[in-house]
Image (cartoon, rainbow, N blue to C red; front, side):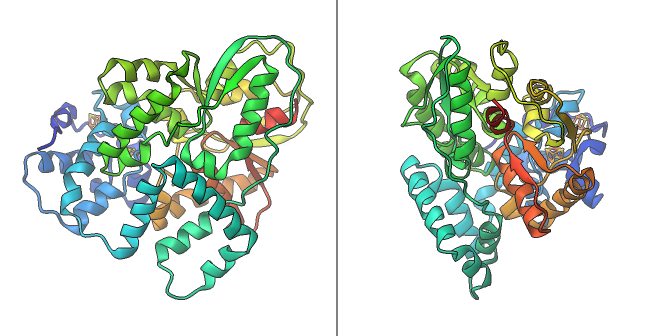
Length: 404
Ligand code: SF4
Ligand code: SF4
């Protein structure tokens, strides 16, 4: 029925427990990696009752990768959690509101055409002030209200502003991502201009789709596999690197090679790089950045730290800006509670995880927060908005491009 046999690698040492954000909140063993592995073992042996408690303990996992990053037995926790969620899916009874949100999250974003339509609808939604109306209207499902509250203000940005090219270095591809296309056009445009300034020809294939992470982590691996093939095909027009501006998408796209053991997909995954990692290896000797004598807060996403393990890249590329003083608000890890659709499906825990970071951010006195994952940016922006704190949240590439 399912393959949860790798749970046997867990020796129940408990070394992962202090690193687990949900265990830190609830103190319940069943909300820890070790407890969840025990639940998975019971599922694997068909020795379990599909109770609300079982669903809750598994659903409350952020898939943040903190346990996997430090596990001495190399338990592939993320892959096991994906498998467990597939196994429990047929036993669930979802409420109508939950079904609507799940359908929106998983099916609309899987279609590039729907993503475009959604992007246009969101612009109209914000222009007409419907965000306020939905927030106040009676009878709107709680999950939809929460989605409405989390919506960031969509920025307008001019994609066509040209930059002088220093030298020709070849071609790169840009991965848009579903959330990036919807909410973060300015990061995509800034990335394009910065790469062009470095001398790269930037290709953005039209036929690309969502990376499939949401589907993979929410019990729908078939759609995730279909999206992997869509992306492989879309980027097969050349052999240039595929650069990604959201660390959550980078983590999933590079992980294709572990999920799909087929050669064309492996070769595609090998070409994928987070844009910050790619930039950190560039010779930027001919680029000049204006100085910024300011403290700038930095939030390192779990995917950047625990999965890609490239958290230094963000600080390395910020060192290109003279005078800047980056202050990491989560130096010892910790999750903001975004975690893909988690910020919608687990609002209480998600906010409990976010609020201490907002406190640190406010106390830091920084006027700007940089982060490299669109989900985290949305989550932190929403937290700041709720407290009426005016701190801009940007991708580091946007700041770099502004100061170029
Ligand atoms: S998941 Fe790894 S670190 Fe955690 S209890 Fe099991 S073996 Fe130990
Ligand atoms: S993935 Fe994160 S939230 Fe889930 S058990 Fe591991 S450390 Fe805890």
